Image 1 (cartoon, one colour):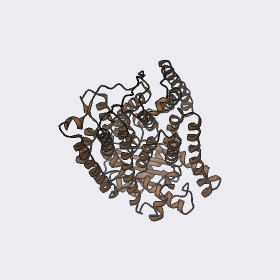
Image 2 (spheres, rainbow, N blue to C red):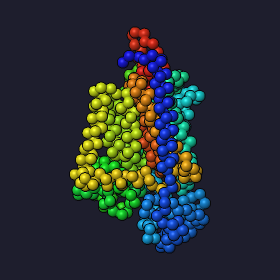
Image 3 (cartoon, helix red, strand yellow):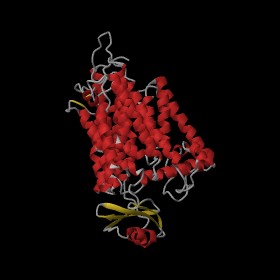
Image 4 (tube, rainbow, N blue to C red):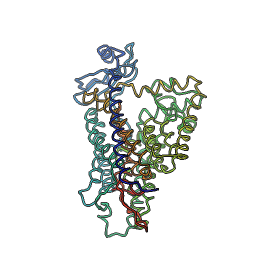
Amino acid sequence: MPIPDRRGIRSGSFRGLVAAIAVAAVAALVLTISHGAQRSPVPPRVAIRAALRDPATAHTLLGSRWNRVSATPLDNRLERVDFWASSQIVLEAAVSADGQVVQSQNFRGEPVPYGDWLAYQPALLIGLSLVFLLMTLVAPWRRMRNLDALAALSLVIPVVLFQHRYLDASLLAAAPGIIYLIVRCAWRGLGPADRTAPSTPLLTALASHRDPAWRVRWLQVALVVLTLVFVMVGVSSPLAVDVTYAVMEGATALIHGVLPYGHLPPGILHGDTYPVLSYALYTPLALVEPVRSIWDSVDGAMAIAVVAALVGAWAARRLVAGTRGRGRPSDAEEAGLRAALAVLAFPPVLITASTGTTDIVLAAMLGVALLLWRRPATASGMLAVAGWFKLAPFAAAPVLLAPLRGRRLAGALGALAAVSAAVLALVVALGGLGGAGEMVRAISYQFTRGSVQSIWAALGIAWVQPIAQACVLGLIAAAAVKLWHEPWLATDRIRMAAISAAILLALQLAADYWAFLYIVWVVPLLCVSLLASYIPIRPRLERVPTVPSATPAGSLAA
């Protein structure tokens, strides 16, 4: 591919900036005008009295020392009532229009909110954090790479706070790390070529007297040990998250020829709010282990979450070790192993895997899509599968399509269309022509839900949220325009991982609802884009002019 001149690079960056500002400005105006407080289906005072009259709620509140209560609309039928003991949430209840508590969650009833209690133990969290730092830090200390690693690790704090029921504090603690990573990933993906000063991975510096083959062997042993930890903690977990039950109930409905939308058991509120592939991909498991209520076993889904975590680590290893540099083959292998271990040692990954949630499966899908990035049709098909599994990956589609031309663009669009057509065919086959409408209505809950679990609710600045959402659209527009004018950037999967991570993190920050489980979406992407070791590319025999934005394909920036 020909190397562009500097004028083309400046033009692409300028046009991307203009596109970002224009799209964000228009979107901010439209979203602000259309944004409005959701009407309460039940007057707050009525909902609170109904919750207090409920025997189960009253029993839970005994001895809880609750001193504050709030009520917010959950949807157009239910009001959510939250009881607090100072800053700790005690109980939440969903109250219907007829004054009945249809579901409640006792935050004091279990030692952890969901997942395996072992995964939350301080000793394990500290041990995993140290391994993560050993895999990601570099020497000397004054490098951006070290700040990136510490920013990522700061996301353990909201997990611990949420474990101890400090909901608002958990949300506020997550914001600085997420914002930092959005900015860093956006700059890494859309900025000039990374000219990071030379550094040495911390592990290599500490064991410099050892043969590289020795380090590789011990990294392989460590990977096996962490794999066993994931299997033992994940599969034996006693507390699956509600999403796990919802997708298994939906899969069970599908094998009986029924769409999940509007036909799931009442145990999980809005368990039918996910795209159809969230349920369809679990149907093989539902044939063996059908789930019809929250009392049925979901051990199979827990095992799938563990396998997905390992696939995400494998994808990171392949992406990093696949670089062909000047060093010995063991250098690339060692870098790949460090990336895989960083994924598995990131503490929220083990906790999330132990809940059985589909978020860990989405992370694996995104890692595989990135691995296939240089094959646009295949990568586009994988991204479409991920999008119909959870909607967020569709936001990365413009980034994939923008640099493509001719047959490559046609192939990518064809793969997106083919997967989407197959999904819609499944919906119509099971639900008739009205099935698609049912799915859209059910999924729309994700965009209209009322929630106290967002940074905007925690700060009491809901009016800023539409502006944040508009900025996300501006970021997507900037990435698409820049890649359209500088398509050679898309050959660097490291840049693409960074751009994708920035978009997905920005979506999380701007959403109505955030849970620490969502962090894992981007962990493989971060371990490849910001935290991977630099491996020099073999120089060409002929002299080629250096251009800042033309990062060599496959290079890894520290």
